[in-house]
Length: 186
Image 1 (cartoon, rainbow, N blue to C red):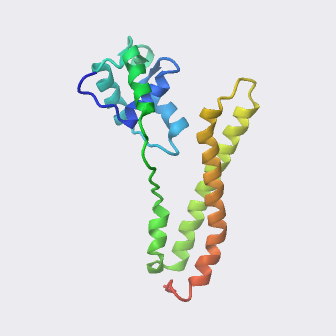
Image 2: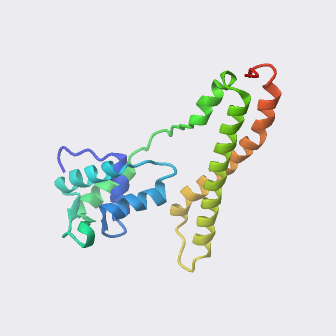
Image 3: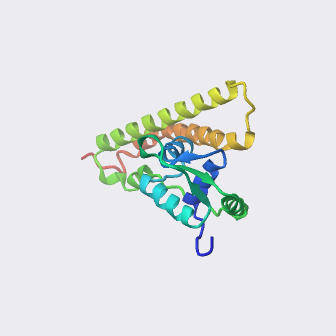
């Protein structure tokens, strides 16, 4: 493990492997489903980290299976590294909301185009909220034990999307109210 610094991507993969062995393909899919809305991982990042973690002894690569998929399992060194990563201070979050940057300079856009963008992004957030609410209902409705710690990110996602939807619901009034003064009629 000497010389290998555990980053957030690697740590998330180790976290998924704590539940049992997974192939690289399964890890990509799991990451997209479970953290894709608040943390992005590319397929190439996943495979690069798997190679590095295997070389560092944090995971063990299994035999090739169907479709040339190789399962990976976390080692005791990987469990120790993952727990140490969890113990560190995660640092502040940063919000990247591309529409906000566009809106900041929206007075340079035709009103119709700006309205299209707002409507499109509102629909994206409405879909994401519906997905979060469906996932929450499924988890709460399941007969298994619900881990409130694991449920917390989903509940934050719901609260966040509801807040964004409320913001969108008042935004058209703001745009209409400033249309004559700040947004040109181009």
